[in-house]
Length: 394
Ligand SMILES: Cc1ncc(COP(=O)(O)O)c(C=O)c1O
Image 1 (cartoon, rainbow, N blue to C red):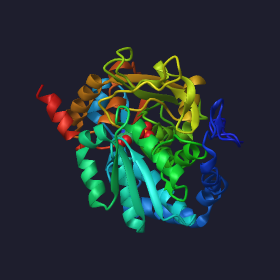
Image 2 (image 1 turned 60 degrees about the vertical axis):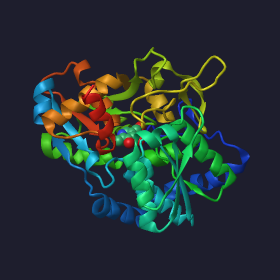
Image 3 (image 1 turned 135 degrees about the horizontal axis):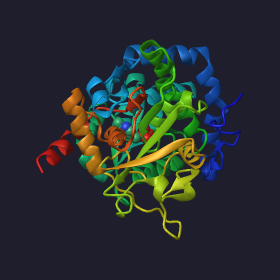
Image 4 (image 1 turned 90 degrees about the vertical axis):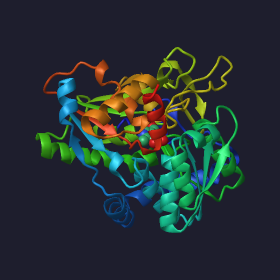
């Protein structure tokens, strides 16, 4: 039986999703829609995708029992180590998959948007691997705050195009990528999260589903049971959360916690806590929940974390929120920084700023001593060292 958390034939999760695109993009999006499931499910794709995930990315990513973190919070806390993937985050699971789809469809020009730069690096990496042309759109603000990743993209041969409108962050980079795509419809838009027009949210979720696929057998090995009690993941567009939740969404007894960025505070006017502040609207080709004013204009988001600094969430997450299947929480910049310092100090792992938001809800939750909790450690903090050091010295 089909899961209610998979989209219907028009790409809707409940009332959210669809493909709100200009006429010019229709043939391009339709080509992907008509082919993506067949390609992903083919033996040829699975063989190449699984082999690259194993030998190139380094999967399976470990499921690490964080002993000191567990004893501090009084639960059994496991970290799904996506930070140990090649390129340093979960983003590469998706880019490996999409580049194989692009190749199958005969595409040679790849474009992408990026916020934290992790998706940009993961896209530039797979383009180098396959010998394809890569252009990455990135907000000017993010180019400054995620400089190490900009250098990596350039080293990998990608062209980095600054987005200079709005808050010069992820939303603006996505606008530029879509604008370019409309003008150059032969390009393949390798989207970095479970956002955009159908079938992109579903395609990206399927490619990130490897995270929870591995969690099942890893938990079985370590705890004797496939299911944890709780899974916690941060949400920008929602791809790492979609991957960590994917094989558990129909298992109502597994608690799913999605953590958004509250910036300076949910009601401070400087926030990216979409589910708390947003209403139904259309952004980047899909109907979802987004932060907007009374005239339907997008409210500029804010977060210290470039990857969570986005005014919407993907349609799957809008549905998980509206249906109550996932619990939505949030963490401020300060709480995220504190959580990053704590993980570094007691486990010797420096998380990405995005990931730190997921860790930051631990003090807000009450655990049973036998509770098994998995936190999706979506990325490593190398790119954020300057921010961490600056705030440490304050
Ligand atoms: C390490 C890391 N985690 C999380 C995210 C947020 O994206 P998503 O919600 O699609 O997982 C990003 C985005 O750049 C990231 O780099």
